[in-house]
Amino acid sequence: QVQLVESGGGLVQPGGSLRLSCAASGSTLSIVIMGWYRQAPGKQRELVATITRGGNTNYADSVKGRFTISSDNAKNTVYLQMNSLKPDDTAVYYCNAARVTGPIETPYWGQGTQVTVSS
Image (tube, rainbow, N blue to C red; front, side, top):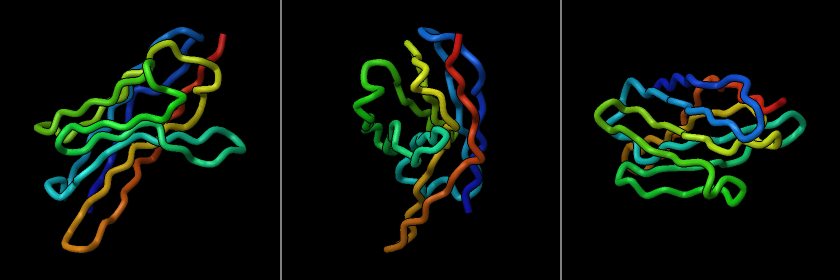
């Protein structure tokens, strides 16, 4: 099992910045990839960014150049630095981890943290 705890959400003005953190605990050695997803009201959950244990990253086109995902493997923590925030970035942000044991890949989700971009 893997437990994920997010922090760092809040209210920010357009153009501002926030940093989200996600701390993983439990069976973390078998985690192969972690990432952030978001879900705005009335919309489907969408990928924001992912990072593999080896450090390879992937971003949604809508956040490229503004958001940066990083990780501290020693602390089992992944971060999302969000700059130049826009009202369209308003959503609940969820941390995700994928754990692989043999042929089985199991996803885990955090409880979500609200990010609101508004003046």
